Image (cartoon, rainbow, N blue to C red; front, side):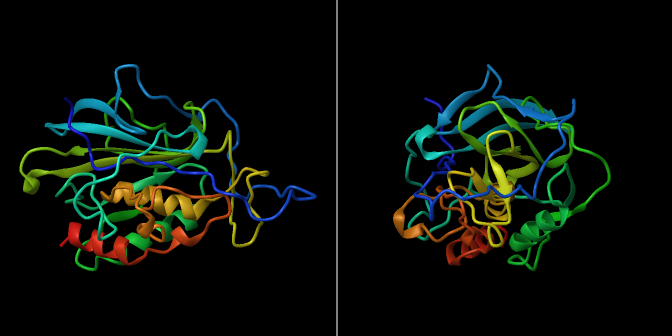
Length: 271
């Protein structure tokens, strides 16, 4: 029986606040359709090791054998029930695997997402670990799609089309997740936000509801980048205020800031 990673990742759709807008606002985060649009599909060889968590297989990265996992966020009606458990859950934090963290600081590249907002969300995690810079600075170059077969030594953050019905976003993380915890590490991440089925806003400035399919970019981005840092999802109701809580809603913005469990967890991982 295949070994589960700690928890899966699910985004739930809660009751929207307010009625249908008389005039729907224009999303502030958009992508220009082109032949380079990122399309994310789970490979046929991948298999689901926990609800909404897919094992992508192994690959070789700089001479090391690494494994890949895809964490998919769904609207609640599309998501499978989560598995609950794992060390640290009672304290409202959990890891993808104990000891699996970044040991080098690497740059990242962005597509048509808001680069300033993205940098701010990365710093939200970095600021809590003064002894180590988890995420590097934005680098030169362009995105070329999420890596579901093998890593390409490029951390990419982009809009795109996620083929799984109901998916809001996907975080793909490559690394070494088994063996002694001291030998585990993360080597690459890609994050894709679906702007085919959802509209992305600054929901502190615009009313976001289920009717306008409005999601707050920074709310979801901070959560996804938590996976990129090595953090797992949480589902107990007592953890509902955490950024890594596994459900979100249109218009939600509270995950832009880390809560006590998020801070304790990332500091424990990078101590």
